[in-house]
Length: 152
Ligand SMILES: CC(C)(COP(=O)(O)OP(=O)(O)OC[C@H]1O[C@@H](n2cnc3c(N)ncnc32)[C@H](O)[C@@H]1OP(=O)(O)O)[C@@H](O)C(=O)NCCC(=O)NCCS
Image 1 (cartoon, rainbow, N blue to C red):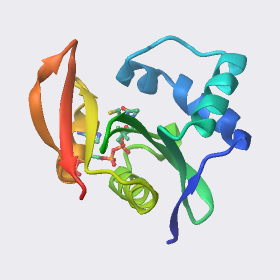
Image 2: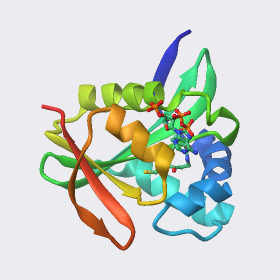
Image 3: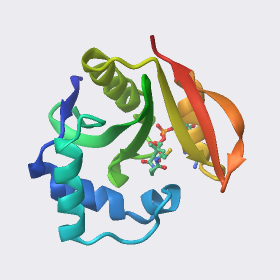
Image 4: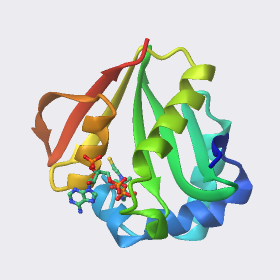
């Protein structure tokens, strides 16, 4: 199987919006409302134009299965977030999706630390980041645990 993390484009807007508006994705997010297409498209254009964000779509044998995003927090420190296509969840794919996103990101950015904000009720995400080498740095704030991993 070929696993590829490619840079997202405006053509991914519909796909990314479907994944974002899925109820489990919203439950895991800081903002939980349903997002409309025009708002989403404006957000996506901003992300693609920003040097402080990096957005990838991960494909398995050419089929998009998930997305990984990195947002710059401060010099050398970036926050990662991951969403799998709802139909691709629960099959043990998330570790490969995250790893592909991390590889693509670190190849093109000078990052020292990657952090993740994981909702305290999100067991699958906690297991994913634990297995990927992230460790807890501080107690949960507003229900989100902050994890981190040194990448360079
Ligand atoms: C979080 C997410 C990426 C995980 O992907 P997934 O396909 O559901 O999970 P996987 O099948 O790859 O399993 C990952 C790990 O979680 C465990 N797991 C999966 N579902 C679980 C559940 N409901 N409860 C507890 N553990 C679970 C698996 O056993 C596995 O652990 P292991 O590696 O120790 O065996 C995916 O569920 C998703 O996109 N959720 C919505 C968005 C989201 O929550 N993003 C993360 C925000 S930080």
